[in-house]
Image (cartoon, rainbow, N blue to C red; front, side):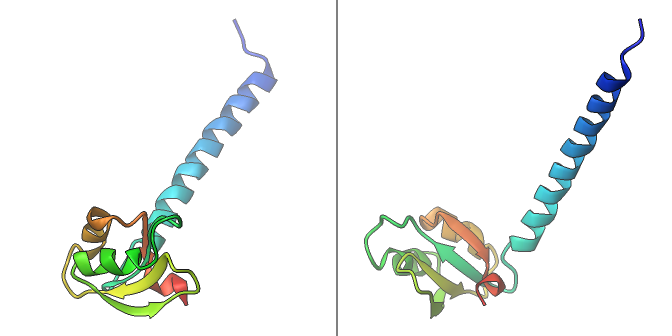
Amino acid sequence: MQQAPFNTLFRQCRIVGINLAVIIVVLSAAAIVPRNGQALVMVAPWSEPGRVVDVIADAGGSIMNGTGAPYAAIAYSDEPGFAFRLFKSGAMLVLDGSLAY
């Protein structure tokens, strides 16, 4: 039994679309992973003021610069695994610090 051309075309477009989505996710993840010890750290917006400072201090980092929001700051640490420690300390999101400039 032969498939209709529309079904074949739809299936091929779906496969190409899924592949493109995976490529975009992988490239985006590689672009936003913190490098050089500098990270944009965000905690929950509903958390108490100063929570981002506590998270950065618990992870062994220092604050380089604040942001306009009380739940985000740019942090720095020379020690490896800084992003992981930030998540472990309570950060909701950790991005490459160069994205903040």
